[in-house]
Length: 322
Image 1: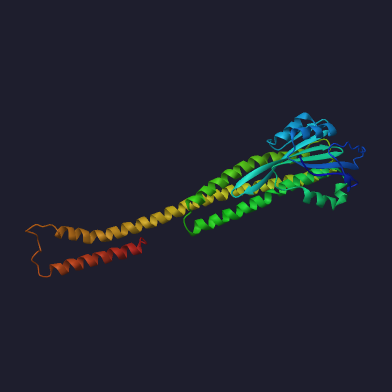
Image 2: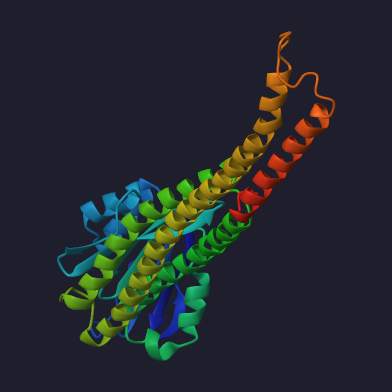
């Protein structure tokens, strides 16, 4: 187990480091609490935390598996929250999980597969003791807000790529790789929506329902988390629509270009059909054919061919086929 940080806080200020196997007695007024952050623990190590902080076995099992959807569970006077982290790996979204155990005098965050550590978040909170002194519910809000804020760079990166593809579709043909990328991103965004929906429910439950360890004064902060999740959901919906429109635009432009080329080929074929037909007639080796002995017949036929071809060219040019 990687213990990222484990500290005792009193009145919003860090007091000392604590050990995982240490029993810390905090007063009932919630002026003191322990904040423990760990990463990829083993089953034995989680059972040790379970004994020290009276964690529910089902919650511990979920935290070990790290394959849960975002949710909020209540076990007696303790709260168990699971949130999903997300990061972009080329065109694919990879997910991690953060399980959070919340008691009146402790908060334990268990991270799996998350690339963003909570050190920066902890430093920010320690720099603002007026919020940290309120207790574990403010820390819970900060962790959830930190996770949701991590979604925004992911969405912005995808948006930049989509806008680039849109410009490529306007300037020329989308290649096979571009089309494959469109469908890959669309599939990843659909999967991402399956995470955002439960994350929205988590924030909504913490905001609207009476749950242990959450003060009424802290609920407006979870409203901010809910607003951020919904904002990301709206941008994901917009991205899916843009990806669909880019593909449809590419198809329409390709059909338009194909139609223009087809018209040009048809026009030139019609123009060339005239000399081909006349030459074909006079290329037949019959003895008795009209006009074979005419002195100026060759020049007349050439004049007819040229005049007819020019007339057809002008006609197709006016019709914008050429």
